[in-house]
Amino acid sequence: MRLTRAGEYAIRCLLYLSQHRDRPIISRKEIAEAMDIPAQFLGKVAQQLARAGLIAIRQGAHGGYELVAAPEDITLLSVVESIDGEIFLNDCIHRPDSCDRQAFCSVHLVWERARRQLRDTLAGTTLARLVEEEGHGCANRSPGP
Image (cartoon, rainbow, N blue to C red):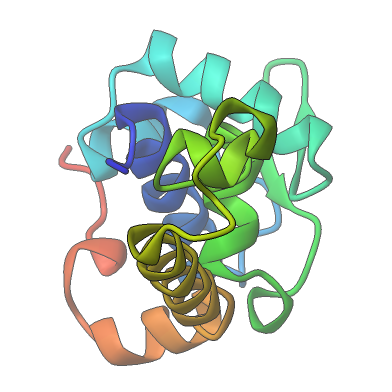
């Protein structure tokens, strides 16, 4: 499994919004510039994040994106799966009927264990924790003049 570019951009967007909770609405342009995300692509990703209930999109001259949930309540798993869908490492995990060897295949058990561990790791990582750990890193950058 490889995180898609859309998934990466979604994480960057939400990190920026989490880092700047003192400002309820932040423009798409500001986020795009600060987090190195193409503005058009960010617009598409934001629509998916809004459908997932993670952000609200405000229209108009003073519009932008607003974080709906608290960073403490948003996990990397919820972000990734809101963009890329449920994580599966192999077809036999995603579609059990695609493999006749499941009942005796030792590799199937490895795929399932790896999937569970990855999901647990992502589910145990919140945006609040990442913002805290990042300190003055990329999520704290402000756009240039």
